[in-house]
Length: 194
Image (cartoon, one colour):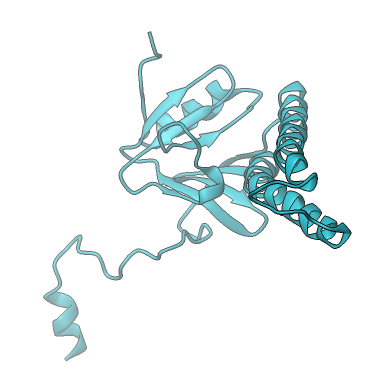
């Protein structure tokens, strides 16, 4: 009988495995706060740095190829028909280096943050790029944002960087108000770094 199987179930046992990608908040979740990173001097400096870095890589790629255009033991004596191939190699190298950096920077700038009564989420369009369960999560509060860490942390590659993996709410106007909401729903505030 179906009722007997349900009656014999272990209380608190998981009914289904957790999905590989986070899902949108359902009816059992209440959205407490939503926000975006503020656009300001930091974002403009990041864009300027990206453009300078791209220009530097292009210049280095051209400098590396210029000696071979004049002829070398390695490349032989290239003719005029080699110029499109050389330019394609320079452009390809720059794109390979710049595209992941641009995608990551673009995702961070267009992100939307959401705090529910259960989770902290980072959205990009209709997709969730990051999720952490608030209950038991460790929270680092900085003057401009929050960082969450928990064992079940989910991060898309566009949110990962050279620092330890954390779900970050960056460039917030009032991180203390958001931190208070997260603390009220189970996140533990870490002491500020010494």
